Image (cartoon, rainbow, N blue to C red; front, side):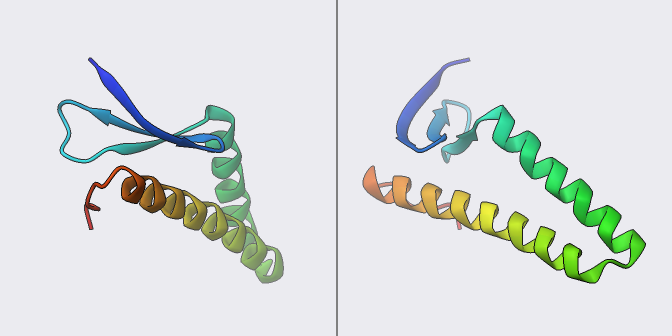
Length: 85
């Protein structure tokens, strides 16, 4: 499988596989693991009724995802590619 690196920003990279129409965003494994841990925390907080900390965890997840989407959109624009949405 061949992957073409199309751009980089922080700990993310825009990469394309020949078998896919649109590029994907590559994130570091430690970043992915941290995001999963926050999602685990969110579920525990919801189960225990801890709304205050649950809101904080949800906001942390949203902020991370917003950042990934922003990087993806910016990098796609930099290389002149249309978005898949």
